Image 1 (tube, rainbow, N blue to C red):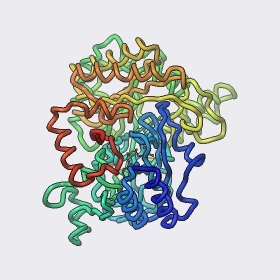
Image 2: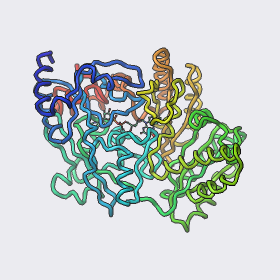
Image 3: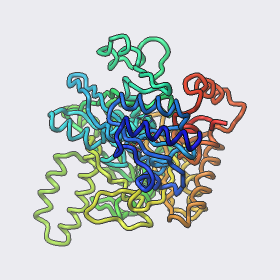
Length: 519
Ligand SMILES: Cc1cc2nc3c(=O)[nH]c(=O)nc-3n(C[C@H](O)[C@H](O)[C@H](O)COP(=O)(O)OP(=O)(O)OC[C@H]3O[C@@H](n4cnc5c(N)ncnc54)[C@H](O)[C@@H]3O)c2cc1C
């Protein structure tokens, strides 16, 4: 690519999109700030508003050999934010494409554009009186539903695996053609939403952590809210075996599939940094090492036997367990008004935390976890939290950990030890998605810019030691892409290379992202 190429392309993009939606020079600064502390030259940012504009801008990029890097809302905090993997890309910022295109209220199938945020989907469902969960994540209301799904994000609502809920895709390919999932492409869109795989090779998977196209719309299967949702919160009794406790949790989850949703296990430091205290009240004494919560989705008539099942499953390993639902919270709020002054305020704060947790479990987007990453920067008052604006330094290490004690316990110790060794907060938590799969959620929170190299070294050691224990992240920060693909004798990456050579011979789409760097 020469400077003549980029000048020519910019002229054509301005004709296509208008001057204001082709951003250059100082307008690019907000796109460059990232929690990893990396720097990149970005040539321009394009802000299309329709699929046709995306197709045409891709054709211009192909003609002038200019690499593009697409983001939905670009809030991939702790993994790279909006920053491309390689130098000198042009960003495609899809946040203006923010329409909910259709909703099948009977089947819960929503089709949306990349810029639709969690809050927007929540507001839409509420306005239309539709009782479905938003697939929420800890990053809060402002992140893209589609961007998160394409990165295979996960959460605590019943559809915990977000790409797993994607049932149809439309995308612009590197030559400007439009890809559609198979069944819609032959006119059988109605059947598609209920049978993701269609017939023939399943190609939609190429667009998740694949960058074989710029995804312009996605159909997602939403989970309908059940009659009753309830959270159980517990502390592990540290005198009892953690290994045995983990194995009991697995047996419990496998024994009541469908009614028991994901489980979250958090160490004490994680609670302190999220809640601002390790003394969460409600009868939980701050002498625990592990606190956890899980979720029950069921019919009202089934609540009592399920509570009894959960209690019995974990019996003997818990210090305390509490079942909480919206009705109980309303009752506590009522009770609170009868408690005098400072005690009342303290109680109110404790109930507020429960309310926030309950909202997340009910599929309402909240930014509860965001507070945790403000270790070295002040939290703004009366403003939504924004790690980029506020200067947060963060790298996520999120290994896939088979949910059995023989793997979980050594991984937990390794993560704790490695964070401490490098002088970082030992914040360790585990999201147990089902009876076989858990994912470690480890933030390396650092002070920018002075601790950046130390944080990177800590992340690398976590990856190395995790691999020795047989575990590897489900998703990576952009700084780790080169290492991921460097094995020259890997048939896996060879095959990706060959597919790229056919689909994207000039490597114009997100070069180096989950693929070998173009030579
Ligand atoms: C405190 C905290 C808590 C978090 N909790 C969670 C959590 O619970 N679960 C979770 O999954 N993540 C979590 N995150 C990580 C992250 O912030 C979210 O995953 C967020 O949803 C990603 O940003 P985004 O939605 O703006 O996606 P984007 O940044 O827009 O997209 C992510 C990547 O996907 C690709 N992409 C996006 N859109 C397209 C497209 N249309 N076409 C082609 N490629 C595309 C791009 O490569 C892009 O870089 C958390 C972060 C923080 C700081």
